Image (cartoon, rainbow, N blue to C red; front, side, top):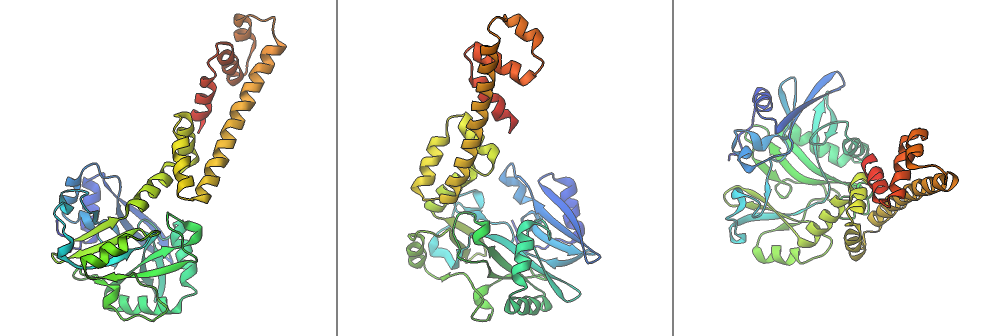
Length: 347
C-alpha cells in the first residue's frame, strides 16, 4: 500500500476500466475538460491493494496534466488491516479533524477554481467558490502553492451545509498541500500563512491527543505516523450522532424508520443530542406521512359508508380507482398496515 505513488491520467483510466469500484467524471469549464477520478462503494479492503487505488480520491487532470492532488484515502483506527497496529506512541504529529467537505484548488488561465472530490459544479464546490471570492488571502496562498507544484487542500465548512458539528460562519480551513511531483503531504503547520487563514489544531503527544478527544463538539483527529501512514480517530459522540443523522438522510429513510417502527429510538437520540434541525426534519416527514395515511383511510371508510349495499365482488367490479379499491379492501379486511406499506413504497 503505497500512498505516494501518483498515477498518470492513463493510469487512472486503466484503473476505472478494470475495476467498478472507481469512476471517472468530466466537466467542461472555460473551454477546458476537467477530469475527476474517485472511488465508489468499496466491497472489501483488498481493493486498496491495487496500484494507485488510494489516490483515486478526487485526483484531477486537464488535458492529461495533473492539476489537483488531494489527500490519498486513509482509514479510521482499527478499521482494517492497514490500521490494526497503530499506537499513539508512534505519532509524528496530529491535526484536529474538521467536519466539512474536502476542497481542492486548481488554476485555469491564472484564475483559481474550487472542486470537491467529484465535481467543480457540486453544491459544495459552488458555495466554496462563492466564499473564496471574498478571501484574497486564500487566493494568494493557493496561487503561490500551485506555482510551486503544491496542490492546496481545504475543508469547506458552512452552518447552512451542516454535517454534524456546527460552525458559526462559512470558512475554508487550510489543511495543507500535496506535492504533485512526489506525492508528499505538507501539513498546514509547515507552511507560512496569514493570521486570518484558519488551520487545524496541532498536537505532538499522546497526552495532548487524549485530552483533546475528551472534548465535546469535535469530530476527532488525523494522525500522521512516523512510518508515513495517515489514520483517523473519531470521537464516540461524533460517531453516534453521525449515525443518527445518516439514518434520516432523506425523506425515504425517515419513512422507512416509521414503517419499521424504529423512528422513536432515533427521535430519542436526536432529542438527547439536541439536534433541533434534524428533529424538525423528522417531524415534518412524520406529519406528512401520517396525513397521507389518514386521508386514504378516511376516503376508504367514506366509500364503504356510502356503499353499504355493495358486496365485495360488486366493489371489485365497479371501483375503477385502483388505489382506493386496494384501500377499501384493506379496511374491510382490517389490514390497514397495507395502506401504510403502500405509502411507504411510494417514497
